[in-house]
Image 1 (cartoon, rainbow, N blue to C red):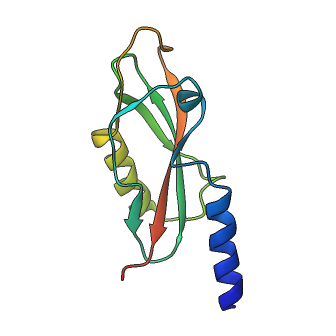
Image 2: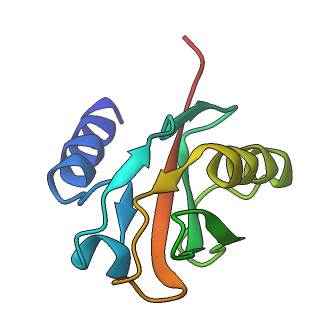
Image 3: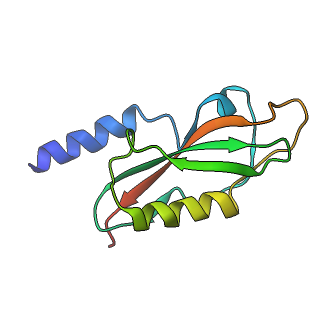
Length: 112
């Protein structure tokens, strides 16, 4: 069991692309205010959110992607969503789409 856990951690870290993905990163939009992409939770896993960003760099929409998320906790989903909506900011610019779409992944880990 221990070897399976080590292998799965290695495998997922090897092929992970980052905490933010999608069209917003492909277009080269920079993040101006970062957030912590990890949260202490009662179990390990990920929460994936679909986001939309306006031309001012603010998150205008943040919805939990239940099919890609491995954690099914409403409490942790609301906490992560509030962090994303209130703290995460992108660069301003009229050269970007009106609603620039992407994904944010929050990783849950056990408290130490």
